[in-house]
Image (cartoon, rainbow, N blue to C red; front, side, top):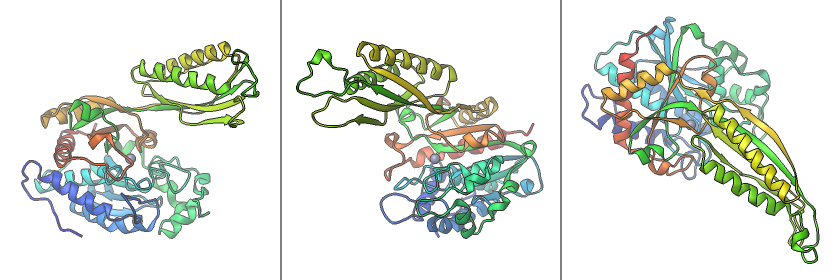
Length: 419
Ligand SMILES: [Zn+2]
């Protein structure tokens, strides 16, 4: 373990470099192979805990593994029951992921707290920093188990979820040294919680495009998914005249383009046709049936509704013209979660204090805030990532951007007054 404590005074860029060094060290706790693979309740998860504990202790927090596999660092005020600000992110990664998705939001606030401590700054409220065990949901078909535990929304059936080897989440937690039956006691008291702040890499190209180091997140996107079934008529691909065909695949192709045009023309709406199945899927048969998925995401419910209606109208028009029958079934829907105004304003003030532009953007991905908003107000700060790349071994941030984000968090913490 490198012994890189924070100096009492620090030059510009110095904290950012320490941050990157720490994240390099954390990345060593991984399955073999490219990038970082650190799944929930794995050996790598177990082995990275002492490193995070060291960071927590240096920040003046007492680390403790909770019943849900979260490593929680608490300051004495938080332990004594004072109103507490929770910060943190997830320790787990996707398979062959990067060094920053998740772990940045653990290491960065701890370094900010350590730097404040070195400057003898005392905060008038409690602090907790959490390294959530599971956010990505890679090992078990569950996500956000860690943050759901804090919000009190883990249900017993979620503990029965099994990994590909048939090990249940309950068994994995027990082997990991946790007591899953005590998960209900992990739930925080909303009256004692000030809010939840997560620092995360952007995982997209917008900040790079704006040439800004950081951005304030307005909302975590709402998501809906649909399954479209198009039925035409199978037929001999050689003997059926072109004008007599009801080719479901040609119809689907036109629909995919119509969806793309609509998405290109609508601000704050993104989406994808990601999966397509063709029946009978044979080289010399006119496709009789095609099923495909549509996913729509927007931070605004009204925009998502507009998108859904416009897509439906466009698809029905194509189906009618091509003599196809169409069924559209909604398979999944999750509302957008807004970040709290006071959090955005406080982050904005902190950005101004550090001399950084404080533009806002929405998150197209889900994060721990989705679960934490059931407990408390949430806020998020995005840090620019190289080429907008994430969930990839080449995921990267710069030391300068890390430094700026640390200073913003320090300013945020210092100006925050408990209501
Ligand atoms: Zn993440």
